[in-house]
Length: 376
Image (tube, rainbow, N blue to C red; front, top):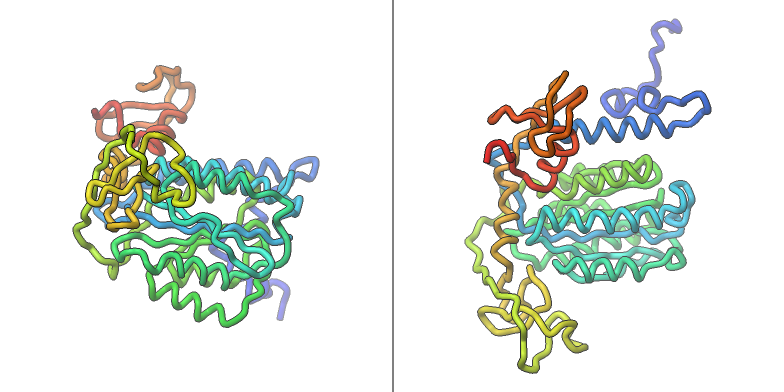
């Protein structure tokens, strides 16, 4: 066969539509690719911001997410300085704040995996303070041994299978290891997750793994590999938006209680801290059984009533009518409609009210406020 006919290897065809590393990661004069990675992350953020979100679609508003943290020896690597562990902990702290800002009635649980064993670190809760305290208790010295993807999935499945059918059950795995030491057939575990409508996603820190790619594909999750700390933050931000709900998921009316945050003078124990005294003199009393809670949203363990605040419920449903993406235009003169900053080269125009905004205001409106001040 002539050299002109030999285009490349057969296996390369599978990556033709994927990320072309040679085009994206271009070395500069000093041989560094940091500028190329920064440009790729900025382009990804711009593309995500300009993408139109689908309307009139069923979303999993009530989300129950188990986050699996790889605490194997691979997390101590200095590939992402100062170490992968430090970078992941910082990214998770930021992710929790953004997640509960976008999903006020969701709940998150934490699982750690080391020495081929998975342990539940925090049960399902909507209290961000409890989650952050649990993350702060982890140290890099805690990491060691090998990672087991199957054990982590089985523990996550055990914590999610008891959830009602109308909630969105998800697993997000932060994985630094390049191998998984499993006790059995992991493909049967993935099929079990698929039958239970548990959406499994993964964020890799080393290189792409076949099993993670197949897991995400089978359960309709997402799988990406982080290039640097900024790219890791971007990958975490993709999980702040509620996913589309499966057609087989239940659609039922939910009994909800709206307790008030009040000063509790009578002596009582909190269902959140049964082994210790309440953390505060204020709390929430279940409107159905009278059990005391430190924070909401939560599901009362006594009567199984869902407890939320009215503002939290209102903020959760704004995803059903998302703010349309603004059109990027070239601006020679003028100022931002919101902050009145002078526009130099580009602007973002609302298609309804024709107001033009700067980049910072466009990001704020679409990621936090979800309303256009010109339309309202």
